[in-house]
Length: 106
Image (cartoon, rainbow, N blue to C red; front, side, top):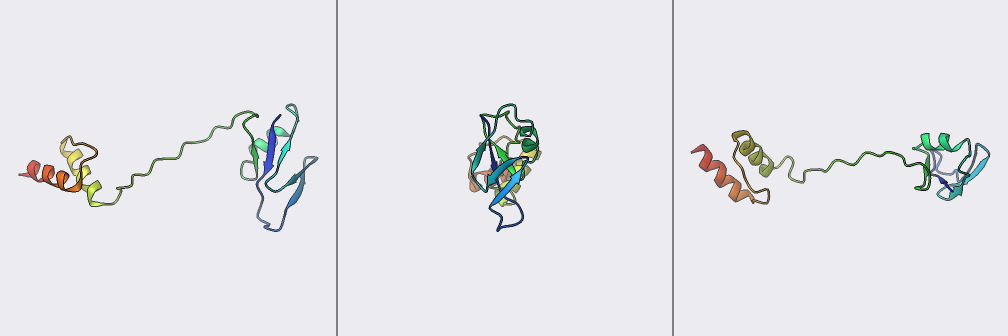
């Protein structure tokens, strides 16, 4: 059976709500029938309610992987090497990449 959890809302003091004939306590799951007509409504209110895995899966976007070197000298040198079409090992250190770039520019 699907479970729906109320995540809360703007009122930090609110702990219990009544929604579509169901009583929700903040953070506690409530079991609902597979054919409950309101289950679809809860699925669409993702900011306020969470529906568990037993219910119809909800598509979620994968978070983008952040480049830890973005905005650094290492990233700038890699970009210059990429522009020139010079191949390098992704694990190469800053000194190695500087040397490759200097050799390419010489």
